[in-house]
Image: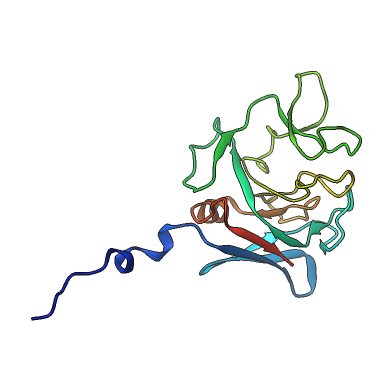
Length: 189
């Protein structure tokens, strides 16, 4: 009689763990739009107004070409419950912002601003930053002027271009978050 035991490693659901890589490619005929492929999931995305660029610079509107890793999820806890993800997660507070000034020592880093200070606030009136996946673009080393605040976030209603990020619908973001972990490669280009 043969042993009918089933190996636990083969009976697990293959979609339960983080993906090793996801890919973002431009759409044919429109460099401001693209497709993100994550395993069997393929979703439309909006890209930077400058398309995908190999030599990203601050303010050029380009989405950087390259291979990146997600660092953490930022989300609006006052609007949404914590989504399922393998990424470290942090709620967005009233003082959370991102430094985009190449002359500042905190360039391309999260910062906290007083209520009176200006800056790129993460807590926005619109819904674009309700979910932000921070990636490691221009972090090691950080080079002044090579681009900052490149995220995966929610898209505008008309899927208009971003300032250099990759954006998608809320439903797509929630599906993607379930499959992302700190070691997932995000390949753009």
